[in-house]
Length: 351
Ligand code: MRU
Image (cartoon, rainbow, N blue to C red; front, side, top):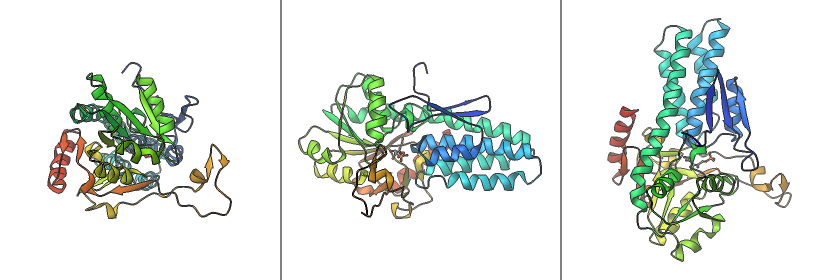
């Protein structure tokens, strides 16, 4: 993929992450050979986005397995299980992290020799990474048809190459439609408070040469009402069995505004983001992050001292607002309980 953004790279036993906290000011790569450093990178959001932290978590497992195997003092699987728990706890909402870690643990449990397990774990991590890019391109192809004939599309947060192993999910849909020759106005939110839209989506769209317009999150209602936006497409951190969707804080409000203004609301995500183990969005844990992300801008305090602050990083959009879920196995529509289950069976069978 010449010229493509490479957010996650495994080379010579080290994991290289493009530090997303430094974008768009500078392109700095952080290298880690210790799984604990990788956990810190996930927590501090040097790497972020559900599929990207899934892939990163898989490589963290490889690093943990190597460390435990090199220690050579027995208890390989039990110590790897402990590391798996630490990695999964790095961020709680995106299911892709737990999904990838559990998948690698399953692979390790099937090996009798630690050294052999290290080899097969690396192969599995590479496979998850490869498969994510393929899934995103399929999502793009399926979703592009939904954008045909629209005057404008609005997206939220960052769901591009940076948030995945490559290409992107919701941004991948926009990109695929654009690559097919469709032309429409692209709007994206700034995405308070961490500014994934302003810093990352804007950076990717400029790099891709797709003209786009950024608005503050609270302008979404106005542009939807003015008719500038024909549909909304967002990513997901976890989709419950009934289609309730956890995604970046502010997504729920966008979905309600889209419905109010007659614009379809689409979620784009690989089937690895669907968690059939949770019946509804009420069971999805919502990460609360440091208050400083809200009270400061670029390290400068903007909120009055003494004020109380909450910083929930995600919200849940009830399934009745979701017109369709675009996955690598096709566009899924209600009834979600049956149709998502079938999609996961197909998607995970192919993976
Ligand atoms: O807190 P973040 O930046 O990790 O949140 C990211 C999102 O909410 C994305 O929409 C989601 O992970 C899908 S990324 C393809």
